[in-house]
Length: 452
Image 1 (tube, rainbow, N blue to C red):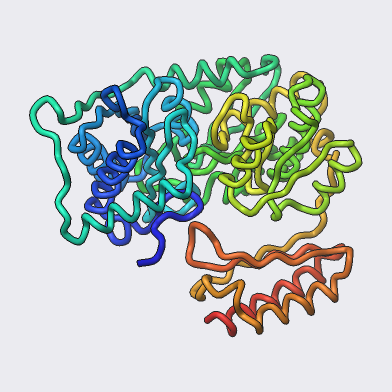
Image 2 (image 1 turned 180 degrees about the vertical axis):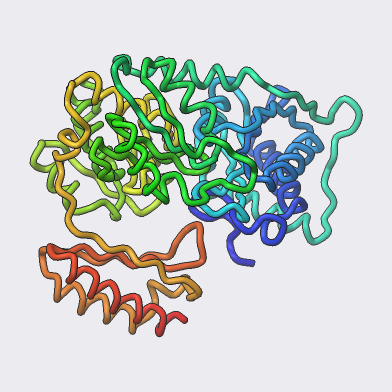
């Protein structure tokens, strides 16, 4: 069996790849593994369970809750809330485990399960591996040791989670947002209520789009993966800026007042300078991934801020931050982690802090974001190939070497298998966009022929 856990939990087409039986089994396995690890020792265990608005989340939530309760874990069901809210509440409420049902930016038919450890941090790889192993062992027939009577878990709704999370967000802001007009694109997702509430209570005038989830429309032509509607709305309403989230709101991308995109690298650059001014940027260091634009690296060097780069995936950014005590990190895709206030990427928090920088500085986002110049970057997703052979294909290695020789020091190439989808990502940066497109196209063709 291939590894179930990717870089961000277990994902697949709901009711096909990710079934109710799997959700239940993984939840029971997680409870048993954490119990074996001593997490529950000396007390009755509690879990926080939340979801995004996908229709499939309704039955998957029921399966997860049933699995946990059947393993003797009390469950606080927080309903539809962003992933970072579930992580926050797991830590805030002293829960032993958090579970989020979401496929983030993926299309509606997909769903996923993400587990959080005590404190709201993502599970270590070895715990995920153990959960998967125990799940597989019992899936094929080994009986569970099940509690009975008063030993079974109890389930209750925890409606206070919404307000506790919003209050947490507002408590982080260095200044209010009075005088700002902001358009929020909620991707018909998990932040459809939380994000507008937080921005309004912070003083902003708010226009919302993509804020009417019906279980089927999540990420459908809106949100951080489809910015055209937000760009148009910002210009139409004369807003100072726009903020876009993905389905579970752990991402934030932005749009300036002219309708131009401000990506995750630019957001990191703006927040890095703002945090340094407040003496909040520990070691004057930012953590980002190898996917960050070369322009971001050059900007940080010019500003005297050290850049540490990791493998792709916010979990690896977070690991580096935790190990060395850094305060800010993130990805070009809009995952931004402010470790003093969040244990995972938090799109609403990121958007609030970005807006606070605009309001507090009196400078438009366009000007703030100009601290870095994005070099032309082309990303091509190549589906339906054997992504496991990216690092072992001699044909592909030779093609990459040729491309790097052509680009020289003015560009770079990065090939990597997606951690959440069945495809290979080809990224090329160059001083000239046409050269980047040409090189990326040729490499994508080689990926298809070598790995197809």
